[in-house]
Image (cartoon, rainbow, N blue to C red):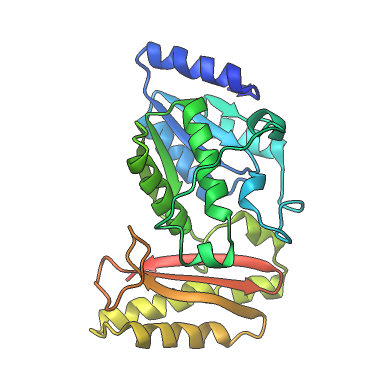
Length: 280
């Protein structure tokens, strides 16, 4: 496995590989890898000739008073995990290499990014889109894999790729969950045992919504009320939003479309922000 930190070296290597007709698959990450990330790498390994994984904690997607400084950065463990799962190249640039001091160009998608996390985390998706666009230009993948857990991010990236004609196929991989249903996240490691128990309420609430639809009730208000009630049973949880949206546009649904509409939640669990979603 090759570890590259230079933008120029990565771009040259990607150009050389493409010139050889090699199919390049890409899994962009911020490190602190868990089984969810590793499942993305496994998908890339299955579908490509060359597996590139990026590790970059993107400062532009964190707002003021968010957790950029304390975000976990276990690089050695991440590199070992990448190698164990068949990565050929890990691109791990420094902040100054990817975002030099005079950097002033940003990519902003202005439709899918407007609601949900776009309200509670202003500027977040501009940061995501900008770095992903840079990574696509540097790593030159044929396809890239993103996780369903970050559904709004996936929608924003797909729209950016369409609007800007990036020659990159976007694959969305299923959410990987803990045995009790909690969606895997690097931020789960912030949780103490009591918080960890309450965190399972997110997936429980989503299942409650899915069960309501399975019984034939397609009322958005009813589902949101039941989900909100279940989350509110924990005093540690402060709800940011509970919404039912179209999975492509991220716009609110007036009525549930079974098998299509997305139930999505975001909460503060004391000092930790958690998100999850499920197709109804």
